[in-house]
Image 1: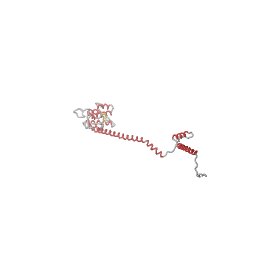
Image 2: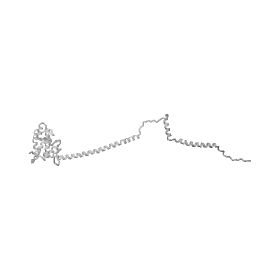
Image 3: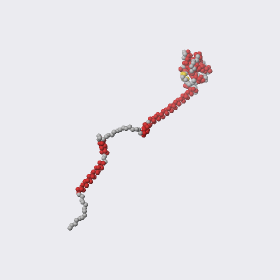
Length: 264
């Protein structure tokens, strides 16, 4: 009698099931990379999607609103700093101009002092009477009076007398004093200078004129001062006497061999 095998065998897998599992695995292998790719869109895809959303008329657009608000303290503190920074160039310009003006004032002051020193030196030389004789140093004016010989008439005494008799008293006295100074300077070499006063002229003439001519010049200066500064006129007799003696005591030129101041 034959015997039966009592061991159990696992049931076999049908061939069709194995084929189905293999197909599912293949499909799954293809779907997983596609899903992974779908999860990471490219930049172009993102830009296209954003543009599409913006173009949708149902989506609200952007809107700009302005609102008033109180200025913060920090803003107030920053604003002066900004303004200060923007005015730096102007401040520098003003400083440069002020510095230049300061140097200009100093320069002008130095020039003024130099000019004043030169003028003072010349004035002192004039007041001292000059150290060197010569026609180049002879003054053309004493104060405001023109003492050049060409500005005076040849006969000073008669010309002054004619002015006085016509009632031109001050011009007559001025002509006498101008003529006397001109004769002192050009004929008698008295060191009269442009700034010499009447008193200084009388002191200077005393060293060069003889006594009678010096006394005449003192009388002439007295008549001139009385009319020019005293507010009253000398007498007609006094003036005509000075006019008549003018060439006697103050000749235009001293003849050779004769004392100075005395006509030949």
